[in-house]
Structures are given as C-alpha cells and as structure tokens.
Amino acid sequence: MTSANNAQLRRRLTEMTKSGTEPSTHAAQLAIISKEFPNTIGPLKFRLPENKYTCGMYVFDLSEDDDYIAIAGLGLPHVYAGRTFFEWLLAGRLLEEIDEHVAHDDDLIMYFENGQWKHVGFWKLNDRVESKWGLGLLYDHARWEVPEHYRYQVRFFRSISSEAAIEHFIRYAQSRGARVQLIE
Image (cartoon, rainbow, N blue to C red; front, side):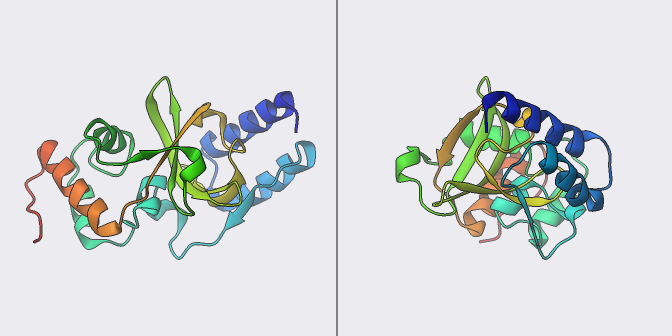
C-alpha cells in the first residue's frame, strides 16, 4: 500500500470510529472502506460487548476485574485505564520499554503523538497488532492500519500480568483521590 493510500485509509478509519456510529455497523463500514483501500484489517470476537471495555482494559485484562470496575465506577475524573493512567505508568517507569526486535508475542505496542500516549495493543510475532479501537471493535491489523488519530510513533513495552496491572491501577486511583485499599 502506498503511503498516500495508507493516509487515506487511516483518515477513513478515523471517520468510521469517531463518527458516533454504532459499533455494530463498523464491520460493514470497514468492508466498504476496504474495497476502496485494500487492507488486512480483520474484526475479532471478544467475550464482552464493545461498549464494556477499552484498549487499556483489554491489554491488562481489566474488563471483568471487580476491583477495576468498582474503582472506575466511582466517577472520579480520568480514573480508568485511559490516557492519564498510561501516562502515569510511563512517567513512573512501571512498564519496561523494549526494542521492537526483542518484543515477544503479546508484548505491548503503544502509539504516541509528540510523546503523548494515544493507543495500546498486543504486538504479535507475525508483525500484526491486536487492539481495541475506542468504543469500536477489536481488530487484528498491521502496525499502520489504524485510525489516523493514533498518530505515527510507536514504542514497545513488556506486557505485565493482570495482577500487576490492577495493583498499578489501584495506586494510580489513590494518586487521583480514590479512597481504595490494595488487596494484599
């Protein structure tokens, strides 16, 4: 795919995911986009409805964690597995950054713009990514077959266990004013 076609594909993917359309229509929209801009993007099945998890919840397996759900449901600003949580993890060096060439299957690939975190997915050894796009679907895709708003810089990080992720999230929530205790 030429870089011009990739740029147009990425713009169309942004329109698809940011247009306020119902995620249930995204697969059909992707099929239409794919006729004009051939790509290798494929929707994946997940056990939860699209509106029940984000990319951050997906990679850390927080979607059904009772502690995560209770804390994220407190209504505190930015206390969920989103941009400020990932920036907190990065600022605290709680994720080990690695070179792409030593990344394992299911390590994390993160997308950035000018150093600001935008998106996360699982890196696959076949040069593929598995990631959840906003309130849309979970996809298998090539590195740059993503919506344009995820931008153009990627970095790689070792994946962490869901147990470590929830411990980090609880500490993050406490730093944001949540009154929760770590479960020892």
